[in-house]
Figure 1 (cartoon, rainbow, N blue to C red):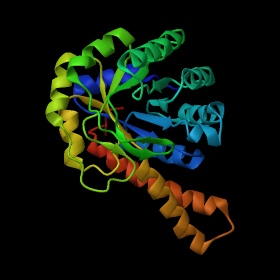
Figure 2 (cartoon, rainbow, N blue to C red):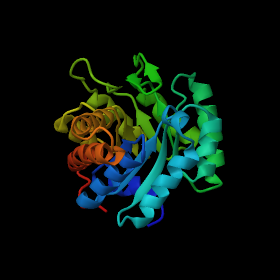
Figure 3 (spheres, rainbow, N blue to C red):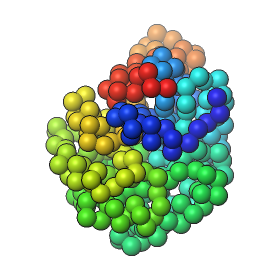
Length: 280
């Protein structure tokens, strides 16, 4: 089927108390793996690329790959810009055919963050594409993104932020981090509850690679409707490639398939953790 937006996808998750898995990809094989997992689990799915990935290949290239794969899929597939770092990149992705974008102004002042997000929303609305934005800072390092992450989302500002920007979903900072965790993360679920009380739009959890099933599900129970996974997909793909290279070092198809299989298995596990299986 054609690419769908994340708007109705996340509203359904909000109403039925599950979360849609959002998976960062780097190449065709990872996109194939994510969609194969969604088909196997009968789950809606979001495929994402970061600004760093989009320096490797243009948004139009990734959009073409995912759009082609989505046309053959029987489950809803959305294509999303993750942590868009500029208005210009968001617009480029919109023009390339992305069906959802994120603008990340979390390093800006509150007012500048609002202004940037509202500007992207105004452009995205011309194409009926939803926009995600972030209030607070999700720490750690992933791709080219690095932050100390010492600023959690302020519930007192969250409602104002959502209202003034016109965004469709809000990424919250409650103790998760990008990249590999050096110690077990402690999530501020009470803060999440407070945000949920004042914000009506779907909430998004970043930095889920490394969280336990129980942690993910506790956040879903308190209003998280989209959960982002990235680092562990890269690790899984790399492990598959390494194993295949030892057996057949000259055929890219062989190690591409091996990486793809590792990613699919991991994505299926996460879809079950998000209670998304059977929701397509």
